[in-house]
Amino acid sequence: MTNRRDFLRKSALGAASLPLTNAIASPTRVNLNDLENELRSTVDDKTFWATIRKQFPLKEGQTYFNNGTMGPQPSYVLERVIEDMRYNAVHGAETDYKGEGPQLLSGYFEYKELRQKLGVLINADYKEISLTQNATFGMNFIANGLDLKEGDEIINTDQEHGGGYAAWKQLAKRKGLIYKQAVMPVPANDPQEVIDAVLSQITSKTRVIAIPHLISVYGVVMPVKEICAEARKRGIFTILDGAQTVGQIDVDVKEIDCDAYYASLHKWLLAPGGNGILYVKADQVEKVWCALASYNWENYEDHGFRLQQYGTGNPSLLVGLDAAVDFYNTIGGTRWLLRVKELGDYLRTGLKEVEKVSIHSSVYPDMCAGITTYAVEGISGPDLQKKLWQEKRLQPRSVGEELLRHSVHIYNNESEIDQALEVIRSI
Figure 1 (cartoon, rainbow, N blue to C red):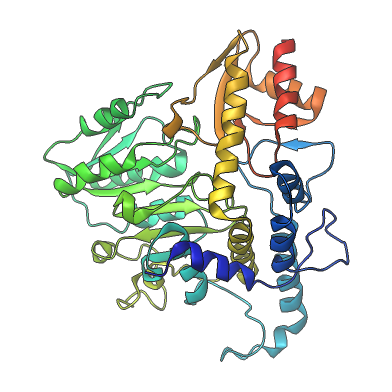
Figure 2 (figure 1 turned 120 degrees about the vertical axis):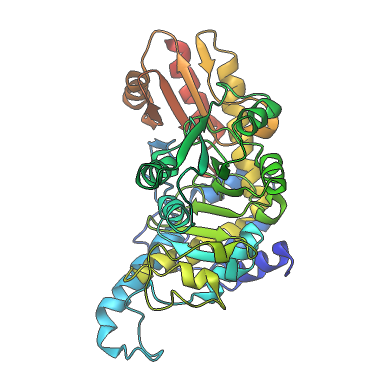
């Protein structure tokens, strides 16, 4: 397989030109080669990340800490989408469906080059990758594509997102399957405790283990490699929810050795909403029917293409996804992911020093990244969210009545985190 790092760098350097300034409407146009050269010339980390911050059209004086819900698009990505939509609207009559003129729709086409880029990103062959609209699509495609029968067992956890459990619950009700949930510790600071909680649910009837790679509410990075290894020994199909992973932590599906993996790319990879992927391992893919079938549902030469049949879609969103991958590669995946972890650790270190704060996320180094969920004694999660906004224009997200989920990304900085800690200390 092509070397991941070399491929990512080359694909980024070939990207088209677009604005790199903070103002969306700016007539200034440079390309990603210029951005890479500018970043290479920076003398320190502070300057480097200040340069990155300028690539986002986020309003000055406001701080976005809710990347776990939706990632803000860099100006480069946003402009690619807008330009493509405008071009298609103007030149639509030039389309002859034989490769000429603008592409007016997606959902039927191969997108080989984009899938190759994504394959390098998660270490998979492009034919193992399907383009979807989000993680929930991927989960449903697998749940409804597997041949399961009455009495078969499905193992989830008790900390699934709705998009990670609903299809399994519905399938259990419809087909008479046995639906089980492994109880996860809160906070989770011992990988073995998590492994044992999942594996203890296995019986001779277990057919599927469907768990998060990174838990949405608490930001816990699960020890999925060990769980998948044990499941494979027992012939159990494993599918991982990666809605919060790609762009937040390193994802290597071959190293994890799961059977299937789905992800949303509008969060941490900063692609436009409506972009996701589904990976199914080559030696397992024939077990999965097309849950949403169209023209190529029997294309067994390219299973990823077969499983991505979803009818008419917006092709400009895929242009934006391609741009998001190029933006990621220009900055450098290793540096990007380390920055997310660095800011997450900075926040958690600060929260530990505040007496009335209880951290519900993991603080175990291998089980935490850019999401931190915590509570502050004497104030509810919604009220704390409101207070942070009113006093400092900081916007994390409350989850439930007690907790606040705080997401940090490459467009954030330590000063913004310090402001949040200042408000919390004042309570």
